Amino acid sequence: MSDIDLEFENIFKMAVTSMRINGSYPSTIRKKLWFINFCLVLSINMSCFYLLCYSILFHDIKEGNFTEACKNITITIICMNTTLKYVVLLYYQQSIAELIRVVNDDYELAKQFPADEQHVVKRYAKEGKLVCLFWLVCAPSASAMFPVKAIILTAHSFWVGENKLKPMFDITFPEVIEKQKDSLPVFLGIFALCFSYAFFATVMLTGFDPLIPIFTLHTCGQLDILSTRTTRALSKSATVEEMEENSAVHANQGYPPSWHQLRLLYHQLGHLFY
Image: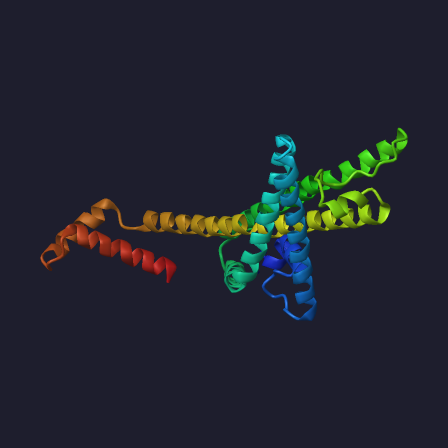
């Protein structure tokens, strides 16, 4: 009885859950609710992108505040990057579904493998799971810095008597918003917008970025097994003396020694894999 029981959705649950949240997982049904979520995600991203670009072009650079400009450009690049990843996940949904199917098929075939080969499959699956864990720690930690910073600075401001609300992003808003940004409703609206963007970026990073390492590690595992089988086949092949003897016998049949050696190796590999 096999001691291996692997499935893509169970092993890489963190990445799958993230893709389900943003609606990019291949099995997600695209209905009305999905379309609303899709429009909401793009609206949040585009709104943050516009506000960041406005601050960079019309205030940070003009005023010579290049430190803030560089910081906001970095956030803008992340905004573009997460949007691009979202589009890629949706556009290549069928290809990703096919890759997941191949991985699951390999896991199913692995149930018939010897114990040492099953161990290889499980080892690379665990390494892929560690990649998911890495992004689960790094992405939320990076995104959480912005709301935590805003909350701490706001609390400190009220503690020292300044009573000022501190936004998540240090940007200059368009004039209409800039005049009202210190009022509680506007501040909460801006905070909710920026927090939603940070959440979406986190979900995209934890869902998209582990995929390539997961598939790459799985391929490495299959190549590792192939390498082991090839080595085993070569070790079981005829000795050099036997090959030379057989080559001499078949020389009269018109086979050069090198060609006959290749035929022997071919048959050995054929018996192993087929």
